[in-house]
Image (cartoon, rainbow, N blue to C red; front, side, top):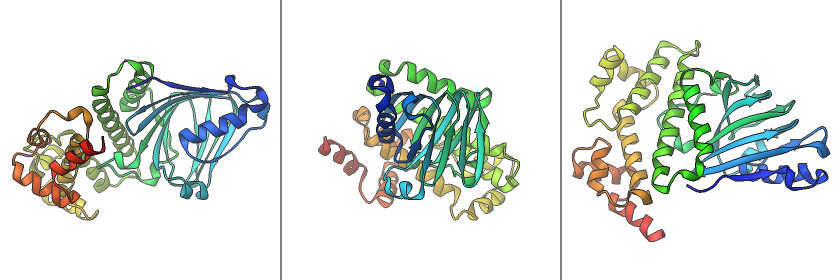
Length: 318
């Protein structure tokens, strides 16, 4: 997987520390406007590592502020969901007109596609996970989740924090074959943590809560070839009719969700250098398909190319 990169203002003189930080943090997190009350006294460091398209960082900084304007968001081609675990100190976030003071033992999320501000009033440490939006398949990210605090001392928040901390400390020990599996685990755990946070939100209606629980169940059982609407309804103790009605309001059926997640999983595996040996049929069957002809037809309809063509393109590019 590679080594951890380290960026620190200790490598430059005090007079250049904030300019150095502005340049290098922007390369990692995207363009924004940074300021500090005592520029010459600013200190900061970032440990960072890449896991495919996912980025994991540990920040230690002194007092400063960050403002990402609408212009910054429009000009930046990168689009991430940022997950922030507050380890030490405090941090103030603002997005969608909501203001949050994040304390140690708490985590929150914010969306780089839209403006936000962050104020660090004191020495602070954060663990930050950056996930491209396209990786968060199957889970809606409503705006009422942004700039809200959740506990990292219990539940899935605690599990996700411990996993990310361990991964960062053991980064250089993972081989390339482990990368895709780790990314899948991190993304799934993040999806489930978001679902848990949303279900704890009292503003959710019964229908919204059922939809989220259904999506969570689908994601946990997506590789089960027997996964069906009836199975999901029985597991959630509701009727198939009501389940269909809840999803119809979103313009998508449960069956469409299942096929889409399976097809995206297959395409990702087919394009992975670490999964070059399993046959196309083996990969399809591992994602719950039980008919190779049906799989090939659905794959072509979804992506405009055959499964073999998708795998061949990877080989040709490399």
